[in-house]
Amino acid sequence: MTTIIDGKKVAEEIRAELKNKIDWLRSLNLRVPGLVTIMVGDNPASYSYVTSKGKACNAIGMLSKIEKLDETATEQQLLDLIDFYNSSNDFDGILVQLPLPKHINEDKVIERISPAKDVDGFHPITIGNLVIGKDTFYPCTPNGIVELLKYYKIETSGKHVVVVGRSNIVGKPIANMMLQKKEGANSIVTICHSAAKDLSRYTKDADILIAAIGQPNFIKADMVKEGVVVIDVGINRLEDSTKPKGYRIVGDVDFENVSPKASYITPVPGGVGLMTIAMLLRNTFLAYIKITKQKLA
Ligand code: GUN
Image 1: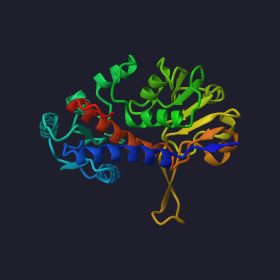
Image 2 (image 1 turned 30 degrees about the vertical axis):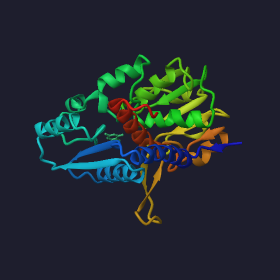
Image 3 (image 1 turned 180 degrees about the horizontal axis):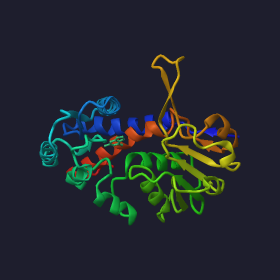
């Protein structure tokens, strides 16, 4: 029997819990956590992500601000804005929406964000702490995956986790998180990428398969074993003239054919994607707690 992992339900529970904590802060007339999202230029996908992050903050009573810089803004203007929010007392989290225009050095920008406010978990110090198992801000999508595995009480200790994809945002951090000698992790981890000559050789051995490739329906039924746990991180647009928007969203996994073999599987949409924003809100709350030294967590 296959269990479809309900990311919507888990994300809603997390948001409700955060809302309760923020309501309580308000009832005590305390400052509430704040997130600033900075975007440069007019990329429509980025705009839609940034808007939904803002809405999610407002829905739980968090302070939210969107700073929109023109496509032609200089790197220095962006760095100055980050400096402003690094020293702001109202904002605990700073997120710079990626990708940035070509003339801006992404690494330099990420490194400018104070690690204390790095709620995306992209700063090299944050990532370094993650790798050596120290308490840190976990990047939102990987953290959402771990949260789903814990919620469904899926055994991870000693299990073979196969990650397909080696991005800095998902593949590398989730592999390192699953490797830690901690509850909800302690896995044997393999990372695969585009240079794998026979990908199935690895994916067929996975107890838990994490697909973060960025190609629609890439993982097929003959690439997995019976009983596998499938976590699909893909969010791909497929043309579909029957849909009002002219496209539909599909994952990296051929859900229809893979799901009958899986013990657990995340749908797309409705799986990992919804967890990402919930984890961003949680990171912002944790940043607030650390910054204000309030003992609420
Ligand atoms: N662009 C796409 N996903 C993300 C994300 O999680 N964080 C940031 N900052 N930019 C993104």
